[in-house]
Amino acid sequence: MEFNKLENYLKKKIFPDLEESRGGFDKVHTLEVVDWLKKIITANPKLNLDKTVLLIAAYAHDWGYCDIFKPGQKMSVELVESAKPLHMELGAKKIKKLLKDDFFSFLTDEQKRRCIHLVAVHDKKFEIKDIDELVLMEADMLSCLQLSPNKPKYDAEGNKKLMEIVLATRIPKFITSFSKKEAKKLIRKRDNFYKKS
Image (cartoon, rainbow, N blue to C red):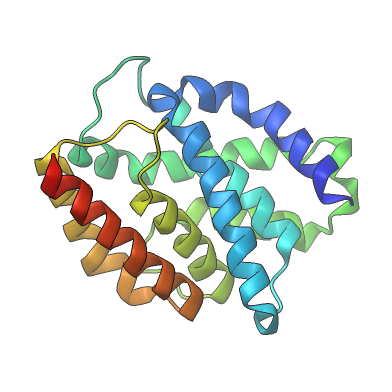
């Protein structure tokens, strides 16, 4: 399967929901996660990752949020943290249903199961341990750290809470030197941004 064709199909099916979810944050965030994922895979060819499975999981990983939050609802770190278990469950159901489309007949049953699994566990920060789980988490966290013009931002207190969680539970689990190096740069930029705010 040609990756452009796959990505276009995933965008067509998933992005209408993500454009509405968390004030459009989820669409911007998902595009960043996909971009970081591609960079991590390219920088780590020896990991022998299934790029197709990881791409599908990256596009679907936060799809479940669209069924939880109301349009215009103000986000807080606590609110998002409390929604994590449900958003993984809902996202896994959504991707399981989508993978039944004839379009995905090129995937093996095991690849489909792995896509669903990755969406279902990607935010279980104390449980993920497999290489593909950790690589998806790295891409997710690099986007989380990345300040982008089109992404809503937390206030200083919200950022402090977010960074405490990320630094304590996510960054220590990074396995690729690429992501460790990029995370340091993004944390430095984020610190500078919030010092000036």
